[in-house]
Length: 115
Image (cartoon, rainbow, N blue to C red; front, side, top):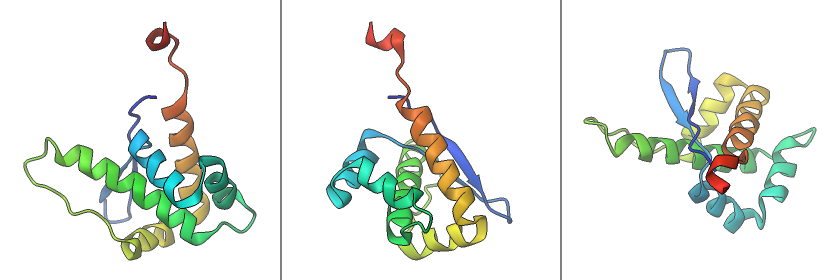
């Protein structure tokens, strides 16, 4: 796995770090049983909003926690209502696409690491 941080940028310029790590994978597995079940829920023609918010919230909060480790000014973690507002502003399709891109980028096999 790779720590691949991407950002969601809001209309006011606020940027939220998005990352898919083992910690995020564990949270999703605990809640949905497997990553595949969770992905099926968010990729459906009509995405499961709760699953989308949960996964995005886990990814954003992990990104904030990682940034907070070295930041002078610590940012608060996001609750599910704030995550819902982010999705509302950016759109479900755009957010689901960013999640998918980040998951793929983070889980690409790095042959050099595995040698």
